[in-house]
Length: 95
Image 1 (cartoon, helix red, strand yellow):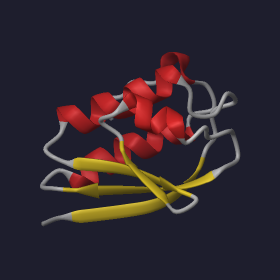
Image 2: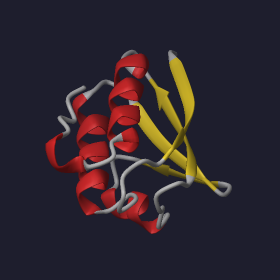
Image 3: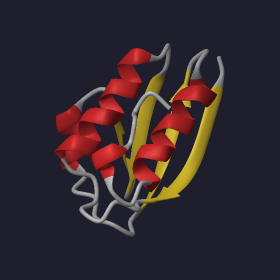
Image 4: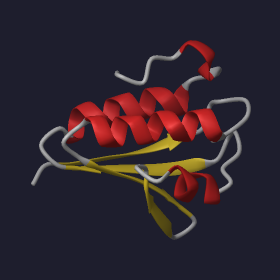
């Protein structure tokens, strides 16, 4: 199984909020992959918007992204782009 992971600092000025969590979920379900967000010894699957929001992540927090599956690299790159975005208003989640 393909696996890709990366540590990322949240760049969005509002942190991981509903719109960002929705975009991460969209990436997770539109690729042949399981996508996880890890923070403070918690690991949640990005396909669950509520699980992602439960981490209550603010700008500047360091998180781990883990993608497992045939499209791991593609999904990881798209997720990193979402998390690194300074402003989520115009970012396309399709990567």
